[in-house]
Image (tube, rainbow, N blue to C red):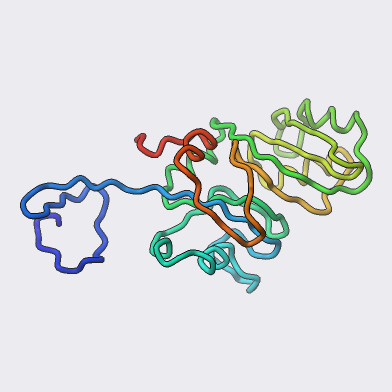
Length: 212
């Protein structure tokens, strides 16, 4: 390993390190893992927890099998502490950059229960895009699922954007849930996880793990 004999079977090997086994050089390929996790209300999407409410990383590791415990997991984007729903994790920072890059425009679908009943005019404003304190938003898909429930699909990810957009049209958010990212739709129970398939990563998120 890197020109020396390695006797520790679980020693970490950095990407790009030359490895020979019985004199034959072996190619190291990094396996990309992407997990779907159903975030409950309460934990924060941070590595630190100054308020002692718990982190999503702790919740995830509590349900991971031994073979997935050794990876360093990165959250793909963020959800507020009180927001529930789909949160993706990966061991590949390239996916995080891809999914959160402004130019990717990866759609994210939310369901919000709001104060009052949004009118057609309010929904039209959301669809057309409106101006917040940090500038105009991109047009969103807005559907009224129930008198006080709005489905909102965004293709950008600003801080508290769903809450700010709905407040701007006069309907503050009471509860918020994310049910889809790209074409990946949440399908596990609260607090549970599952691994995404290669097809889900490539077709659902538009990410090619083998690409540089």
